[in-house]
Image (cartoon, rainbow, N blue to C red; front, side, top):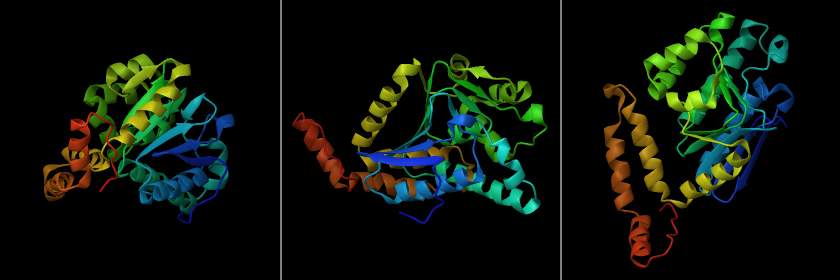
Length: 266
């Protein structure tokens, strides 16, 4: 495992082909501290390097929140000087980028509050599956905070300009049903069913051909970039790699033999 920040506020485990990352600060609705952001970076690097991990699920401990934003109680120790603020912002940007550019599928499993930086983090995941009692909001306009281009672009790419404006202009909390109408989440389930549903979903994705799944993730990522920044050559190479793989042979063979394929990612 890579050298990383150690904290009991950030938990990681691997089950089969799925890696789980849990924000473990339930007494503060999983508000994020500097050490949690830095630990997240380390665990993601470990999961990216482990070929056995094909999907990563991010979730919050306690069932009451995914992430409720920044841990205000830590501001005096972590964000009281320019140097400390810079370190914090670098850690947040690095973690969000690491999630957004993670080469394998990511799922945000959301139960309860998903506020501020929690929404930003969920936006960086590929899929968002939530409980019917979840609440979403970005309260920047209630706090006088500025919100940068990259974060707003991710929201606009997902929900469109009008809903993005509504989320920021009102700074209110939206229900799970409203979030689904906006396209902010993929699925809404009764609270007691979310964990089992996400586990099955993640295992389903993990059982599919990783070269295909990961290539689609990369190519979709290119479509939302400006045309001048798209790496179309790599898109072509990834598609060719799929057709040249042993998994392509295995997929065809398994289909003809009416059995479940055993993909190896090669």
